[in-house]
Picture 1 (cartoon, rainbow, N blue to C red):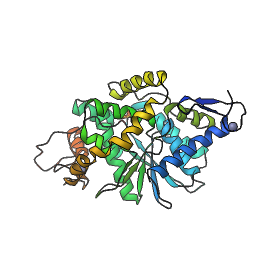
Picture 2 (picture 1 turned 180 degrees about the vertical axis):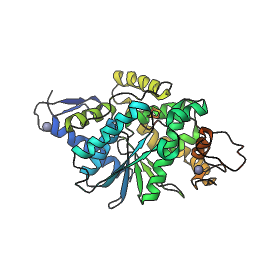
Picture 3 (picture 1 turned 30 degrees about the vertical axis):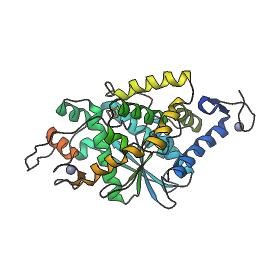
Picture 4 (picture 1 turned 90 degrees about the vertical axis):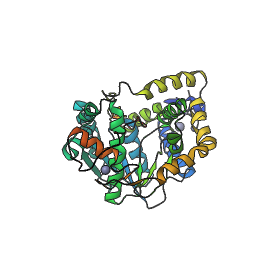
Length: 325
Ligand code: Q46
Ligand code: ZN
Ligand code: ZN
């Protein structure tokens, strides 16, 4: 196996591109894919402040690393989910990355929020109170808090580490249920709207295996354990299905996802825009919501972390959105 670029010994092949790379050219390939994705979908403009959602896993740490190397003003936000040792260890990987890779010396910083300390609930308590799969409560808490933190600290955009495998799996789930609202919002860029900063997914052109290799080759240690609450997360099953398709015909995942982004997404965009136009401000926290009180505040109320002095007629909406590990 020889590097496509320099013909030296390759360390990794990327079947989707029918190419293999040596260490340096593989790292360059990853940066290049991110640079192209940002450009292609107009994710970030020069000078914008980016808040990277870092979980301690390979994708988000690689994303932060690549954005910093590409010269973006990118800070991190770690959200402690209160999932026992898993969360403690994940947080330690984030701290270690910041320390060992000179993040603060280069003018970037890490924000942290602890869900249990600051909002009176960890994900296990939230899941128990709702009697539903934890990923629903977890996903909605992440979306709410990353958006809120970005608004409060003056960031223009939130970047998440969703890669090609994640996005293809979420798309498969949305298509299997023909969930038109989610299909309208499934795009590498979700534009800003009143009460929402822009959301971008710069790793969308890179697969899971490439992200793991990126971290290993750059000396980034990351949380390799699966989240113990992931059981019942349907996206894991969708990934298996897509992996077996990809084995038989490399490139099918990318064709599935980018075919949708380029030719299908637009057809569902109106539904998403209509849903967004109907949003008003949560009477408790001010976040955009279709009802009177947002799903995050209703979740806190269920857990007993806050009391809401209004009549709540709508149930907690914790439908399983995209997993955002
Ligand atoms: S952290 Fe949260 Fe994920 Fe764990 S509870 Fe589910 S969504 S699986 S990516
Ligand atoms: Zn090379
Ligand atoms: Zn609220």
